[in-house]
Length: 244
Length: 224
Image 1 (cartoon, rainbow over the protein chains, first blue to last red):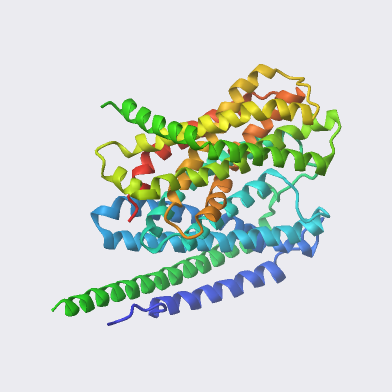
Image 2 (cartoon, rainbow over the protein chains, first blue to last red):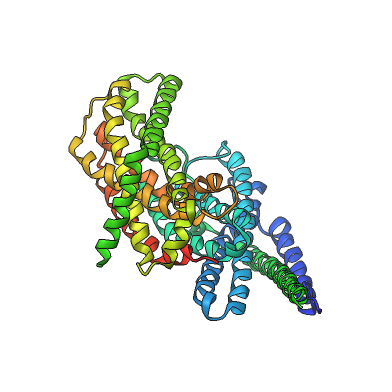
């Protein structure tokens, strides 16, 4: 049986494009963009940290949309539903990867800029809670029984999507009642025009990279599903031969 | 039989089972008491400090205790394949869920009623804010825990490591509700700020998640 490819010609071209974009964007960010006035060269982490945090807020939507499609197709068209499920798991895992990078680089930046690794500021807290939600989604996928993983995970994804706006509001209220000791967050409105090209290129480069990861994880999951179906088919055939 | 009738049948059955064994309530009560004692030893709070932290400790104790009961809530249905029978029954599955969630709400409420005076004694509590608002905060907070908890316990019913999975998925989803109930309780105990927004948050959380639980329960019950 023909195995589906994980890394076809489209993937190769995409990979090369991504690589070129990352090299160009990193060069812009590290070497060509002007040095920031107060923080100096340390502020160049902005070109890495901010695109990752923005993208880690985009990938959850892919997971949620795919989960809704899964629930819709579950009984109507099981094969399409499996495709949606593969997209959903890819979206969740890329969210966790980008969220982790956002949190870690943010900590590094915070240590230098604010003098502390972590503060329970509104943005940091809500990012951490988003990360926790998607890690729990992956735990569920890991621990649930084979036959029902897809459905249970899709249901949890819907719950997470309902939770996110409530988290966002509650954390904002929480922090306005108890002002944080350190004011947090790089303010985008203050970005100088000369920094924009580096910033925009970094967003593009890391978005390309994220989509590449998403595609590869999707292909991997599809391949696993195919192998599972093949094994199930063989088991059925074997049982039929036994009966004769 | 009406929808409400189905809910009442499930509720009566769960209450009767619990009345005969009293496993869940006794277990929860003793566990919550232990948590309260351990925290009291760990922090050794003064009266002013305990007003600040008591809301958090009370809800953490109840959260941990209710996890114990929620894990047991559906295993009863698995004995003698009762759950399979209920899947085949011509009754709405969400009635089964609602009955069990209300039963759990009653169990946790009984634990709260017994625990609250003890708690006030151990932590030397004098309420400064509007104490009567606790009558609204306690049921709202308990329902927020129990509704999602019952749902996720059913969701994890046929998984490996069922006991482990429930807190892992319940805690992240419940964080805004936990924040709401802890902040509202602290606001009432200390009287330093207005509990109003937090009570509204709890109401919104409960409405959204109760609707989601009722709508998705059938999917989870027939997940294969």
